[in-house]
Amino acid sequence: MAVRWDEAGGRPAGSTAGRGSGGAAGPYRSRRRSLARIAAALLVAAATLLAACGSGGGGGAGGTGSGGAGGSVGSGGGGGGEAYNPNATVTLVTPADPTFNPWHPNAYAESNIINEMIFPGLTRWDEHMKPVPHLATEWSVSDDGLVWTFKLREGVKWSDGQPFTADDVAFTFNEIVLNPDLGANHSSEYKAVEKVVAVDPHTVEFHLKEPFASLPSYLAYYAGILPKHVFEGVEDPWSLNEFNKKNPVGTGPFMVAEYVSGSHVRLVPNPHYWGEKPKVKDVVFRIVPDVNAQVAQLLAGEVDMLSIDDPTLLDKLQNNPNLQLERVLTNVYYFVALNQDDPRFQDKRVRQALSYAIDKEAMIENLVKGYGQVATGPIPPLQAEYYNGDVARYPYDPEKAKALLAEAGWKPGPDGILQKDGKPFHITMTAAQMRQLVPATLLVQQWWKDLGIQVDVDVLDWNSYIEKAIVNRDYEATLAWWSTPADPDVYPYYASEAAGRGNNIPNYRNPALDDLLRRGRAATSEEERKAIYAEAQKLMADELPYLYLWWPESIVVYNKALHVPPGSYAVKGLYVDEWYKTR
Image (tube, rainbow, N blue to C red; front, top):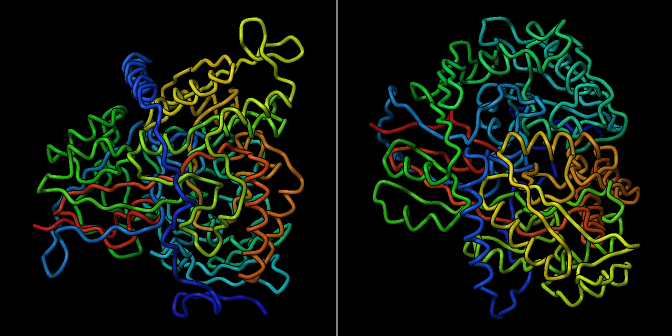
């Protein structure tokens, strides 16, 4: 029987609306930390941040998300019956110049929230991280799981007044997302899609090569539709700077009114928007690379909201009477990626050894003040129905790490540096100036040095980092994070075909994992999916495609005059069209 979901009828029978509470990933061991060494590394990190490049980094690090997903943010001071202020300005920050195109290869965390406001997708997530109608009002899937049909909302216009039709959806996917020569951002998430067909002006069909049960969920994840009438005939859509960097055309609740590189982006309500009109006059994104400057602006009342990923900053914020704090569970995980095009890192024993050498609990305690859990894979406890905690773990054990390296053929040379076949073990770690990435990288550097590995750290500004490490894969090891969809389908981040130009940034290739993840995509029952993803998590924990570090909790701090509906912030991006400020 085909599964159907329409706007009036709600979710399909048998689906689950609840979300996990994020139970502990495992018991914490009580023991003394090497606090002096950690403190020294953090001091070095501070000096590095001040000295390197002279300009700040960006908003995400090798990740596509905005930093929060899961959990919910409650209402600020604007709840109840208080009247909203239609002339209010909501001021936010982004850490680097954005790109106004959700599919552009360089559009990552600095752009995601803005693009969500300009370019909606066919679906969006509700507060339970489940896909619900957006530009599409209903959808169904064929009995064989190979054709998804989406009915589109009628009367939708682009911000330039042109009508939105099924041709725009088909063009976006066929000519941009599925074009292998373009390397579109997130394109690896749609490898199962063969083509998209415009059946009539308000109906599209996604024809698949293989079943893709999580398609509606992925279409809610930074999958905005682009205007065919703007891009048709353009050989290189990434070179269309008039659109990508100045004046984009979208169907979302907001449109760009002003953009000054290095200063700010101002968004105003789109007069052609089909949905409920925003309750604010405009939204300004200040471009502020430095997190301390962001905090200073929040304290000064110049910024209305920040997502704080560094709990050491909370001392400055938590006693301010004008601010409200919320802890938000996330679908984010921090990791070290080892470029497995390098033969050294193709040996599982080496990957496991390098993981045993990292004191993950010390990182959580000293970098994020305990606001996190040791990660065992990409599926967090937040996804309680799919999370499998019964997997291999790698507690801090440098002696075990040394034994595994010796087993893999790495023995100390005359200078104490490990060597194999006469070649010293040297690793260059590439790090972005952002969040805890540099301090965490310096800690890893020290722990790996203790094993006898020579480790250098190359610190880059955000845009340079994305180009070098993520787009070009020109790195040996890098510490970053992913923010993944609220579905256990992690195929785009682990599949062999996503290595090289997709989201599989370690370039990890494993046919056994590919098979499991394909089966997970094809499964139609919840029980079957749970069993498959439980097995996949065991395989990933053993193989370590990434060296998993921690699942963070994010702290959202916002102006009490700002009303944020539950789930609006926490569920993938800022649905600012739902926000308002009280008078």
